[in-house]
Amino acid sequence: MDLTGKKIVLGLTGGVACYKAAELCRALTKAGASVQVVMTDAAGHFITAVTMQALSGQPVFSSQWDPRVDNNMAHIDITRHADAILLAPCSADFLRKLAHGACDDLLSTMCLAKQRQLPLLVAPAMNVEMWQNPATQRNVAQLREDGVVFFGPAAGEQACGEVGLGRMLEPQQLLEELIAAFQPKVLAGKRILITAGPTFEAIDPVRGITNLSSGKMGYAVARAAREAGAEVVLISGPTALATPHGVQRINVQSAQQMHDAVMAAVDAQHVFIAVAAVADWRVANASDQKMKKKDDGSVPDLKFEQNPDILATVAARTSLAGYPYCVGFAAESENLLAFGAAKREKKGIPLLVGNIGHHTFGQDDNTIILFDENGHTILPRADKLTLARQLISEVSKRLDKYSLFQ
Ligand code: CTP
Image (cartoon, rainbow, N blue to C red; front, side, top):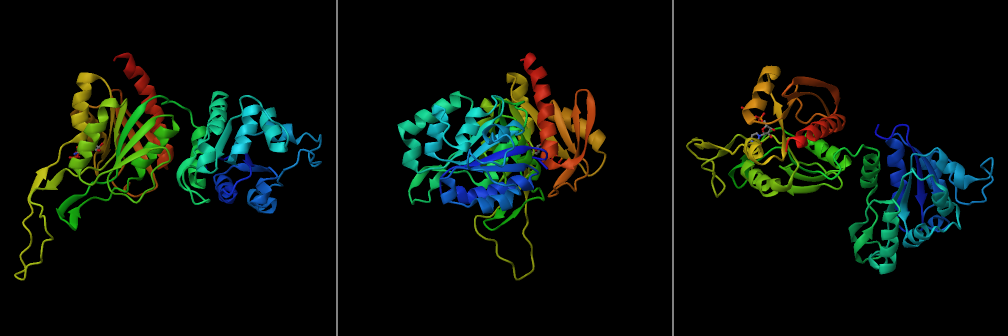
């Protein structure tokens, strides 16, 4: 589990988004974290300590005069063994307190007394006008300068009925952000373009040809790249997957659309990772209208033409201009070692990832082989996010060497 062994202090301040903190607390414990909840009195107007105690499995602290801590110094003891403080929801008033070093309740005193290296992560939640008010923005700017990390806020419809920036991120997004905060930032400052999922080649307006790719590996690679600090653009064929938080997603259907979207975005990228299962052929005589079944039993005479090879096209540009560093994927049904090495050469790319077996489509885990100029390395069976993180780490090491030659 991604947060196994991590001790998280979850601070709740006064805001209606406290109702989401219950779900967040559950998500954190399910991910393996031990959660110590600290609430302000204002938070207690929105959600009870009983609920948070039941979900965290630990008594909740609210008062700086709480005698349950042996030396009566809860404001120091609580954070000394923690791996992060996450304030969710964090109100406008609490941002003000943090920015000015206030310490007039347990949570603010604890934040002031925390050791410097302990990450302070805040998920603001407030009305749009409160968020945009220059006073709040001054506090936010000060806190960023002080090293506080902000998760959100998101834009959208608010509990008060107004619309705009100020919504707290959803519990699942906060969980992803927290997990990301613990990942090494090996791609900080890098821009990464990723293709994922299947393509869909139309036969007529209601039918088409596609493949069994679920997009899971490509989405895992996008999430891992974002966790590593990269700015990520994900060009995706049709999938039912949620976009990883913080990733910019562009939806396409056909291989030609995927090609055009990649070409429009590729110039600014440091790395291009082609995970998509792109259809090699499209229907050359696709019909504009729905094809009707024939009474005489005759079947459509479909003709095919080849789609552009997106990866090979980008790789050919790369050899002229340097970036992006290109990574391909290959799913072979036989002879992976020979076919993988040959495919890397043929596509003209420095790194190719081979899926062992073509039964990986739709699965949650996988075994992969990396092919590069030195041969191949096997990454043992693991879930796709774990493999994606290992791949991103391998890419970052190669990128460091690669950039020396640019
Ligand atoms: N790829 C691509 N554009 C295509 C076909 C493939 O960008 N039109 C990329 C895939 O995203 C993958 C790699 O090329 O990263 C290899 O895809 P694969 O289907 O295994 O190889 P093909 O080149 O199509 O060769 P074959 O199907 O004959 O094995």
